[in-house]
Amino acid sequence: MGNHEHRMTFADRVDACLSSFETSIDRLSDEFDIDVLRAGNVLTLAFDNQHRIIVNSQEAAKEIWVAARSGGFHFRWDDATNQWNDTRSGDDLRDALARLIEIETGVAPKLQL
Image 1 (tube, rainbow, N blue to C red):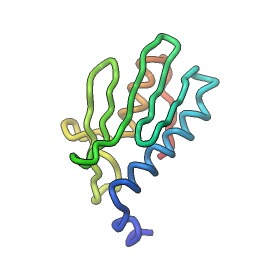
Image 2 (cartoon, one colour):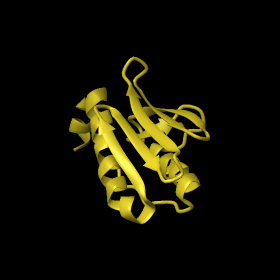
Image 3 (tube, one colour):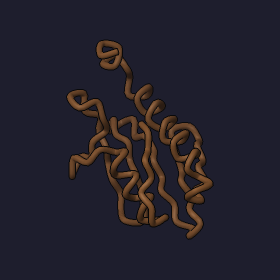
Image 4 (cartoon, rainbow, N blue to C red):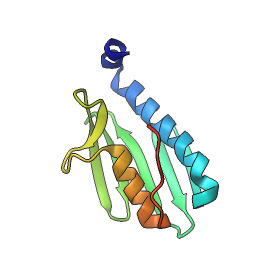
């Protein structure tokens, strides 16, 4: 898998990332009351409190951007760690998204990526 992994394009990685988040969060949606909407490369999580978290790809910057009540975050793929890392804090996208969901629901979900 290692060699194939490096040949994945930005679009492939984004699609794989958003698809796994969509599936993972969908499984939690009854327990956490989250509506998950996917339109192309935009994943919107809608909460009962009317807040939203939006995850989308920025092709030109080769980043995934996350917009939440607490701010905007940019993640860039890191071949060394095989994960999307926050360009400022270095946090992994999965951990960051779980924390943002916890802010809205009070519970940190276990997200698969």
